Length: 159
Image 1 (cartoon, one colour):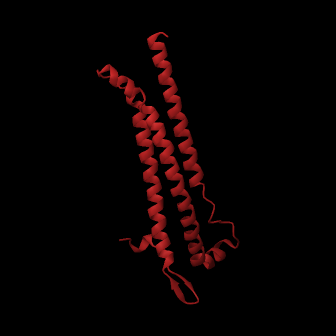
Image 2: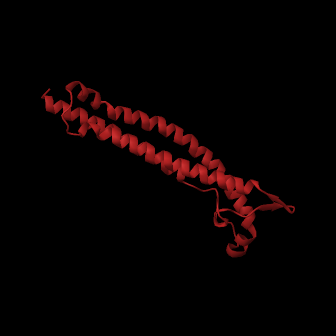
Image 3: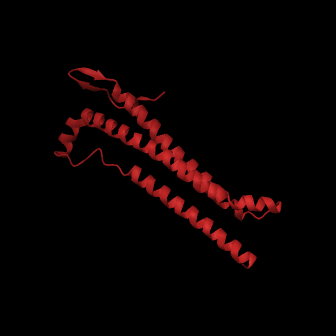
């Protein structure tokens, strides 16, 4: 249960409270946490699958061939997970904009009194762009890692 410091005040229109403002805040917190959870899970799986071929252990020779392709699985997980994350980020953007609209309505008089203009734009957020860039970089690094493994195998066998 959220305490009073985590909720936004009710927004009133013509004296009627809008409980949807609190529902929007709860949805925003949920979506934001879900996006961060997906970011960490995608990163963990991709990084773990990328380093498996570097582990130095005595295993069955046939298993080494299978382990060689685990970075490709990591790349696949990153791409599919990134698509899912992108969809969640778009939902988060909508909820964020709605939440900030309620927030602006609730505090509009205070903002006008303090800042005397609309220099503080609520809808500007680069979270989706930053996360998308992060996933692109993660995929590029995973592909570079796989190419490096190909070169290591090529030079090891003397081909």
